[in-house]
Image (tube, rainbow, N blue to C red; front, side, top):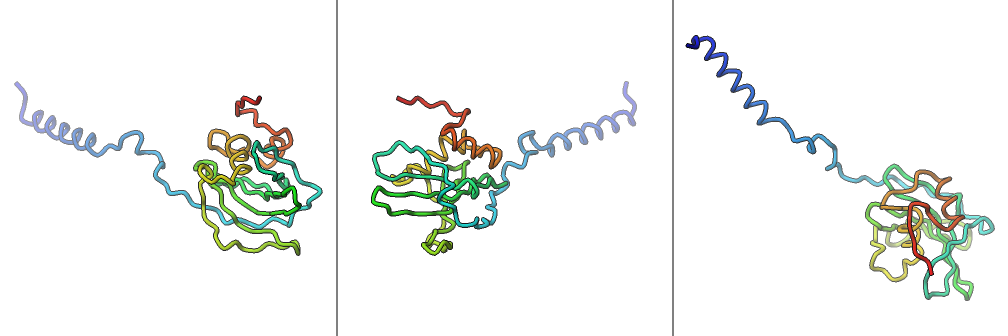
Length: 178
């Protein structure tokens, strides 16, 4: 019925087909999803001009006022929004920090602390901290969740970030305000 050469060809073809199917990667394995995240090096911006800050409205019970230096804003390829945050108490005490917000994980990192002589100093601790459980990070949570990192993705550009900060709302984020 079948010739010997036909059976050998059929057997070889079957073996090749089985081998090809066994070594084929699944569709999801063809993407580079397991690539580890790598943080970019942060470049310190010039010391902020306190007359050029954008006020930040934060719903909190503290007496601090917060503002962002628009000239310091950068959006990195690593998904981190870096900016200078200025916080001032009602007594006049002021903190100036250059920080990063990692949108994907909702974390912040302190890169530098502003000094009275208008220079930057290195912080003792500079590591990623979750914004979810630290009570004092009101301004950071507002920046991350409602303004600069909608759906855990950073805004596209410095210009977009400035526009959002000036209006006090991100059009992609729905907020119920009393």
